[in-house]
Amino acid sequence: MTSATDDKTIVRNYFNAQGFDRWSRIYGDGQVNKVQRDIREGHQQTVDHVLYWFKQDGATDGLTVCDAGCGVGSLSIPLATMGAVGAASDISEKMVEEAKVRAAVLPAEAMPTFEAKDLETLDGTYHTVICLDVLIHYPQAKAGAMIAHLSSLAEERLILSFAPKNPFYTLLKRIGEFFPGPSKATRAYLHSEGEIRAALRANGGEIKRQEFTATQFYFSRLLEAVKVSK
Ligand code: SAH
Image 1 (cartoon, rainbow, N blue to C red):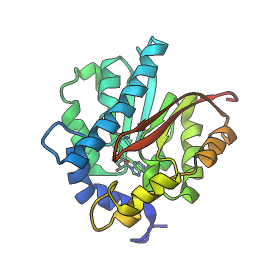
Image 2 (image 1 turned 90 degrees about the vertical axis):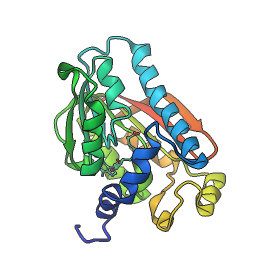
Image 3 (image 1 turned 60 degrees about the vertical axis):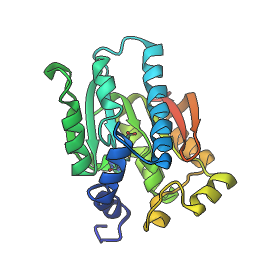
Image 4 (image 1 turned 180 degrees about the vertical axis):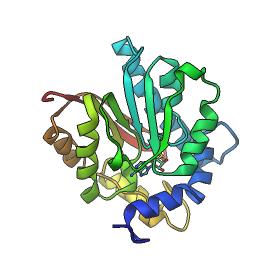
């Protein structure tokens, strides 16, 4: 479906316009307001958890990593400095362009490949596929297909984060702090943790490690689903 109201079209347009302004600022180190600073710190914790898992495992050198919905490269850039061979992609051209600018600090041989692409059109296989804080932009009905496709690209594991549904977060979302602005109602989807876990299992993933990050305005469940059937 390609109509203007299609979920992906809405998300791409948002991250090429006001969403780009908002999130590239939050995922940066410049001045932001209090809510944005809180979200920045929460998101950084999610990124740090993933980096820590790689460090725990050791031998990141040469591992192929697909960062689906890479944003401005907050994860791909540090992973590249650890020696991972990165394929970073995002549905928003603007986010990818900004990621390239920020990655310019990397030596040429460590440079991830950057591509503007919807995660469902990605192909190839990678040791690890990662998709952080992307599902929040899609309703539960879309999440299953996204997880199935991401799983099909992963040789060893899929690392995924999402905002879990519970009464408190549902209330917070309704109050609108998480996505301030006129279009907030269509912007944040909370997901049933049970359904996400079931989708990961259905695609051959067994949850090995998990984390939960909650600051005042940011909350994200992080799961590592290791392939049991390849
Ligand atoms: N994963 C990054 C960025 C999170 S922001 C990080 O944690 O730093 C969410 C990103 O997902 C945005 O850059 C948005 O453009 C991207 N995105 C949303 N839907 C997508 C899709 N279907 N395919 C690929 N990227 C998508």
